[in-house]
Structure formats: C-alpha cells, structure tokens
Image (cartoon, rainbow, N blue to C red; front, side):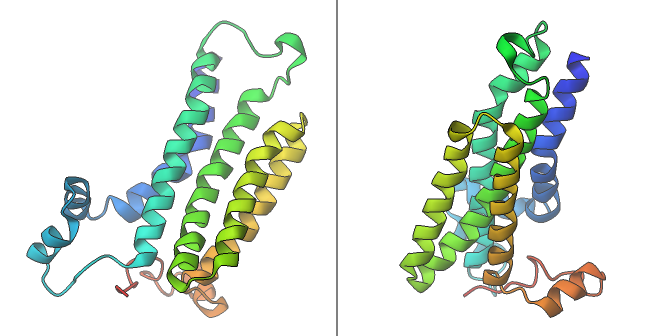
Length: 200
C-alpha cells in the first residue's frame, strides 16, 4: 500500500507539470541545451538566424513552470518519502488523507506558479504595478492558507479558487480570447498555445 500511495501522490502532484514540460518545452531540445548553456540568444541566432529571441510569454511560462516544479519538489519530497515508511498516517489525530491533500496542494502550487509567472512578467513589461501587487498578495494568501486553517478541504477549495482565477487572468494576458479558447477546445487550432507566439 505504501508504494501505491507514493506513486499515486507523486503522479497527482507532478504528473500535470511533467506533461506540460514534455509537450511544450521538451519538443525543442536544442533550445533547452542552449538555454542551459547560458548563451541562449547567440546560440539560437546561430541555429535559426530569422528568430532572434524567445517571446516574453514563453519565458514567463517556462520560468513559472520551473519555479513551480522546484517549489513542489522542495515542499513535497519529504512527505513523499514519509509515505514509504512504516505506518505514520493518522498518528496524533492527523487526517488519514494527509498524503492525498498534500499532493493536490502541491499540484495547485505548481500550476499557480505558472500563472503567477505569466501575469507577473506581463505586469513588469507593461509597468502595471498593481498587477505585481496582486500576484504577491495571492502568493502570500495561498501560502498562508496552510497555516491558517487545519482543515484541508477549506485550504484546497480556497487554493483551487485562486488557481482558477489566476489561470483565467493568465490566459487572457497571454493573448487568449473566448474565440481562441473555443478553437483550441474543438481542436481546430492545433498550434495556438505556445508555438504561434512571436517574439516581442
């Protein structure tokens, strides 16, 4: 049972982020190699002279995903390792669903980092300081939820509400509209999300 809990919670927490990485970032391995090497613009110009630099939206998405994964790993790896140990769930009156709640909270934090990154980059680029303040305050609010209430259901519902609101905001900031959402959901615009974005 401990292996099932371990893998189940790991896939809940990191599965969507891993899928986003595979389908959006890992499709261009040379770009990743040059970004890691540090001289991204020079390397990208040598490979593809007509494309100068990745768009700010793409950088916001990639950095948000990176920060989200790092945050998730640091916050959830100890909990995951405890799930493999001898029966520790339920000691001292803890919820028997602790690992499941932690996995879903890690998932929402990872997705929120992506949305925060997109909205934050847009606020910095357009010098909308109130946008930066909203991102910082929602970050503090979602982080403080884990300390304020010992009830996991309230924490998860509040965090997922913040995630949906930030996701909608990030979608429209990234250039989405109701028309493009309809085209994407009906699979009529296959390259809408990241590949059609041009450098600014």
